Length: 171
Image 1 (cartoon, helix red, strand yellow):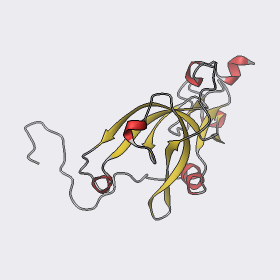
Image 2 (cartoon, one colour):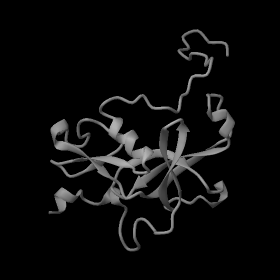
Image 3 (tube, helix red, strand yellow):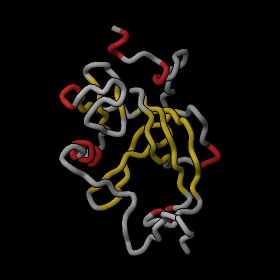
Image 4 (cartoon, helix red, strand yellow):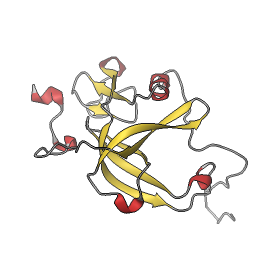
């Protein structure tokens, strides 16, 4: 790649892994749970809303770290959107093309960027039910991905969890 004037793109060299997390004391529970086959979310004790990606504060009401806790997600989701990636030169993605990058609506409310596995691109449908599973990205590092599920989400006759009031507001 030849950088253009003002181009901030840095050529990728070596064997850097762009799919591996930088874990720290805060995110360690998330990655430890993933290695055990559990997806964790953060939920705010003030507004009752869940969020993903993990943050130390609530991005909805700005409650502090002492008001936001970890909880295990149900693992159910609905496909919001996707893109089938046919070319990616970053390690290790080049060896995995084509793959399906996706955004899913988790049953608990948040949207999550992920990958859909075990499904032909022609079979993907917006709103299709998905179930979390985990893929080992590196030795001991597991990431949440989703595969087709069986239970519809949202259940028939209900709106998406993204349009429902958070649990605290329904009390």
